[in-house]
Image (tube, rainbow, N blue to C red; front, side, top):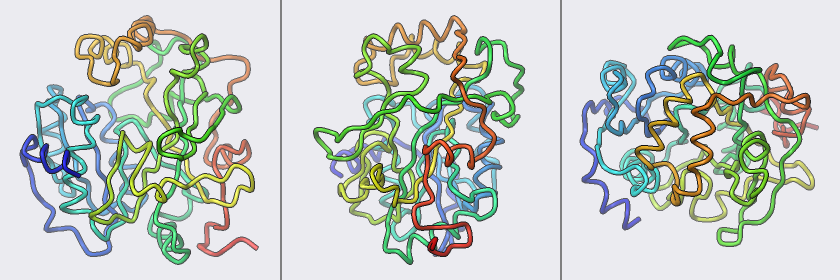
Length: 327
């Protein structure tokens, strides 16, 4: 909380439309940089899910992202040129916005390359889901971050800015995931998937963390620690039940591996902003600039949220899409 208060002066308001926020609005928070290719579909996806207002921090974009977001009628926008890594990967900046505007709201905190799905998300919006969570006294929703990828080299797919990424990224790893209790925060720590299989097979402990708690009924005392992998107080990230499958969970479809990944990785090699120990990830970004083929014979095609339920990657828990306990 002290970090959030200290770093609040690093962001400058560009467009403040927060007076439009209604008392029951679901809010979305994100830090972005050079995401003009993804943002039209990103906004469309979350508007359809029922997000009422978007609060963005733009970290020195130079591809038109800033102007695009500033022109959106349901977006409030702040800008900064300060270090993404030294702000705990944007969490200090977003934490200030959570503190100022999130109290009492269901708040969704995601990256521009993450699309939330959940059981029944094609039929019922976030208001139905959060209404049920409220009725159960549940203040948060957990989600697995699931990497999607094309078949063939990642830099050869046919993708135009504004397209639905899922028309290109049709495949995912379905079963190579593991979990353990986090030694510090005592939440379920999930690793595995395609990035471990392709890039971290020799050192799986270094593979990216895949557990997130992106949706929280916010209180001003709450705070994310690093990305949305951990949140305090700790009870908020007690969101997975792998033994009995009793918790309703979602999936963040991770659209990282669009054809633009090579250019973004080359930029990250220069900027060194995305990992606490950037040297450990140099080989990872270098391989991405080479356009690797991530597909394997064990890959699964993504055909909608039901695919993920069948594979055990997300769970109905005690909820169905009518908002009633399953019986």
